[in-house]
Amino acid sequence: MIQAIAIDDEIPALSIIQNFCSRTGFIHLEKTFNQPTEALKHLRKFPVDLVFLDIHMPSLSGIDLYKAVQQDTMAIFTTAYAEYAVEGFNLNAVDYLLKPFTYKRFLQAAEKAREYHSFLREREKTKDQYLFVRADYMLVKINVADILYIEGYDDYLKIHLTNQKPVITRMTFKTILDKLPPADFIRIHRSYVVPLHRVESLRSKVISIGDVKLPLGSSYEENFLKHFNR
Image (tube, rainbow, N blue to C red; front, side, top):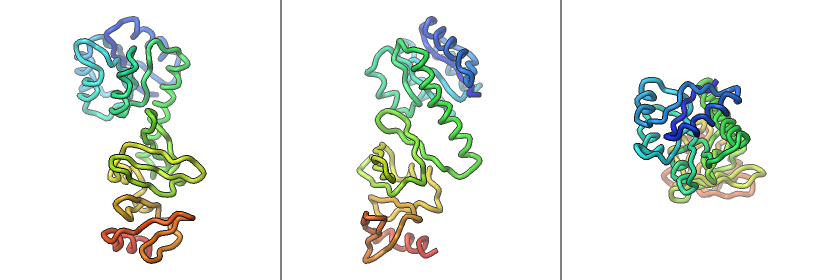
C-alpha cells in the first residue's frame, strides 16, 4: 500500500483526488491539505511515499514545496497550466496530471508510482535488475541485462540497448554508475561505460561489443584490465 497525501488550494480538486484514490486499491490517501505550508509541516513530521501536488498555488508553489521536502518522496504534480509540466519533471516527478483529468489518466499515473515504489523496495533487498531513467518527460524502465553500452554527451547519456531504440536521458556517469551493479559496469573512456560481460575482445586499445568498436582511454586502461582479467 502506498501512503499518500494531496495538496491543492482548491477544495474541489482535493475532492476529486480523494475520490479517485478511494477507487484505487493500492493508494491510501492519509490526508488532504489546501494550505501548502501546513502540508509541509506535516510532511516533515510524518513522511509519506507519494504526494499529489498542485503546482500553481498562491502562498507557496508546488515546485518550491517539493524542493523543501527533505525525504525521498514520489510526486505526481497536478496543474491546469501545461507550461508548468516541464519544471515538474525536472524535479523527477513520477508523472503530471493536466486538469481536468479523468480517472483513467489518474490510474495511469498511479500505476507508474506503484511500479516505481515496488522498484525502490526491491532494490533494498536484491541487486538491481532494472534501471529507471527519465526520458521524454516520463520514467522509462530499462532492463539492465539489455544494456549494450552507455555513451556520454555533455549532460546527457545515450543508453544503447539490444534490439531496442537507444534511450537518451539527462544524467551524469556518476549518477548512473551508482544505480548499476558495480561488479559488472565499468567506465572505459570519458565518453563510455560498458557491461564487462558484453566485452568480446580488446585489441590496440579498441574494445569490441558485437559490431561496435569503442576506444579504451589511457587513464581507464589499468582499472579496466584489472577487472577484465579477473
